[in-house]
Amino acid sequence: MMKQDLYAIYSIWLREMLRFFRLKSRLFGSIASPFFFLAFLGVGFGNGASLPGIPQGLAYVSFLTPGIIGMTLLFSATFAGLSVLWDREFGFLKEIMVAPVSRIAIVLGRTAGGLTTGILQAVIILISGIFLGMAMPSIQGFLMSLVFMILIAATFIGLGLAFASKMEDMSGFSLIMNFLIFPLFFLSGALFPLDRFPGVVKDLAYLNPLTYGVDGLRYSLIGTSAFSPALDLAVLTVYCSAMLFLGAYLFENTEVK
Amino acid sequence: MGLYEGRQKSVIADSFCRFEKVTEITGAVEQGNVAQPALDGNDAAISIHGLTKRFGNITAVNQISLNIKKGELFGLLGANGAGKSTIIKMLTTMLTPTEGEARVWGHDVVKERNLVRSSIGVVFQDPAVDGMLTGRENLDFHGRMYGMDGELRKKRMEEVLELVDLVEKADEKLEDYSGGMQRRLEIARGLMHYPHVLFLDEPTLGLDAQTRRHIWQYIRNMNEEKGVTIILTTHYMEEADSLCDRVAIIDNGKIVALDTPENLKDEIGSDTISLDVQSGAEALMQSLRPISWIKSIIAHNGNIELMVDRAQSRIPEVMQHANRCCAKITSVGLHEPTLEDVFLKYTGRKIKETVGSANSMVARMHMRHG
Image 1 (cartoon, chains in turn orange, green):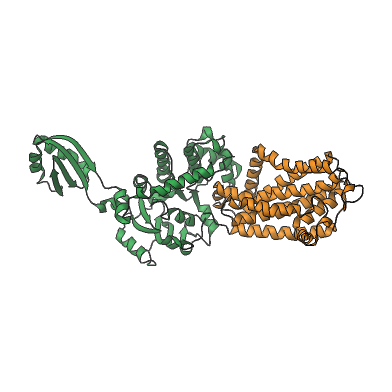
Image 2 (spheres, rainbow over the protein chains, first blue to last red; image 1 turned 45 degrees about the horizontal axis):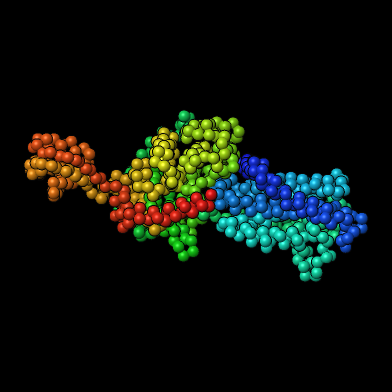
């Protein structure tokens, strides 16, 4: 990779950081809804004993926190990928696309930006969960959860990028939110164990990359999981590579009208 | 200012034949694939051959062939929707041509995109700035994307900010800039990496007269002093006329005329001097009739119209004749052919008749950008 491409990756990452921290309302807005989910559901359901499928003696908030971390990453990463649409709308995409840097560098810069902001928000949610009563994870557990966070975020940045490359304007945005992102969230086992789903729905959940992400996060942070962490890691890695590749491929071939 | 030192003179010194016969060029265009007059590859900043872009059934650009020389200030003149922006987008690698080839600074716009991109600067028609970043941050972003290190970025940034007179506003967010200031910052940005070729797509669209004249001045300076080859699109006749070395009139995706503004206007015919005469019209007519450079005289109702070439330099002589035969003239009018007349001749329309769509487009743009 040329020096110029490294500059470009840094430049695009830096712009994401400047924008993220400059727009305070976005910063708080993006963290508010997962926080409310965590606080109201976590406190409201209280002790996990009332929910079948959750191991005995595990507080619901402990079960829920990895799920909400998954939700935070799902939303912020998809947004980061879709932010190409904003740039298209406000014209800045042309400034990026006309620069003499490889398209891969542009994708990597955006991915780096989305990863940073996504993981920052995820860690804030993790800390909130601990305050609300989740047991403190071990250092190893935390480091392992970071690996899963990165994989989840990269997967959905790739997905967002793929959609943004194929959409000409923002009219399809609410369709994506309502028919893709929310179903992915509810079908991931983030809020309750997958056993509670009927057969067909459960199969759908097994196709959802977020399912494995949330499960891996649970294993890392609270030591309980539905699948083996190796399976979680393997499935998520495959999804992540495929999505990033797809996003990069479609973005590379996007035209700026 | 130190911009472009060393390169400028040799580029400008590449003198070129500015007075191609327009008939030859349009002839070639009409026949589609007929080869262009050979042009030494080193002389061409841009060479376009049979360039075509279709969107579905619509042919936006239809078999365009054109050579633009190094150091030239070239204008693409046409109504909105004529295909000017599409040509620019193909030349700047933003759109892939459906057919044909184009080279910018010797590089193929499809096969050597990155080489094209590093040779050019572009100011797009719609704003392409990040409103949440300051002027300096926008320029800093740009500098990094073009591989400049910190020291060079800083130096060039101050240089171009000074050029467009924005040093004082440089640390304010772009969303707080006026339209004219944003435009100037975009021009500064387009120059920051010292491009060989600068593309300006409707550089003064929607700006007030004063800002427009300022921007014309920058454009002229860049071309004359810094030797940058400039391709601009416009639907303002006076802009093309006052700025461009050569103009191509684009209509329905085709080049319908190509020459210097002067030659294009000369084709339309002579200037007209119009005299309102209170008394002594008959004597004045007698006095003017023998003059060889007056092509024709038409008189009615105390008004005399003289068809002449280079009318401005003839007016004093006409006035002397009037004094000598004691004719009393109350006013003198002068009409020179304009590019508007040229446009009308080649397209059968006035460019203003098509402006309605332009306005609605601008309105839409404003709605979108809030």
